[in-house]
Length: 95
Picture 1 (tube, one colour):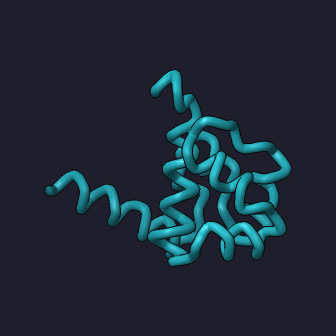
Picture 2: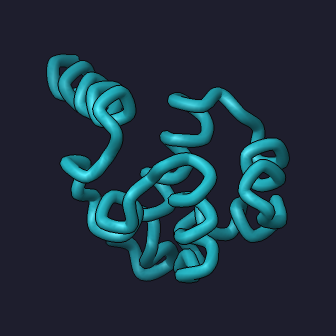
C-alpha cells in the first residue's frame, strides 16, 4: 500500500464496482447514492478514506457490504456481484 494513496485498495474496489460492474460515470454513480462526484473521485484515488456515511450510502444504493468495501471480503456480496468480482480476478491471474 502506497503512503501517497493509503486507501487505494478501497478505492480499487469502489472503482471496479462503479466502472466495470455498473458501467457508470463517477457523476452518475455518486448521484444515485446521494454523494458528490468529488467525494467519490477522492475515495477512488485512495488518497482519502471512505467515510462511514459514504460506505453506508453505497451499501444502501448498490448492495455493497461494508466487509467488501473496507476489507475486500467478497463473500458478503450478492451472488451476481461476487461472481463478477471473482471472474475479474481469475481472468487477471491467468493473463
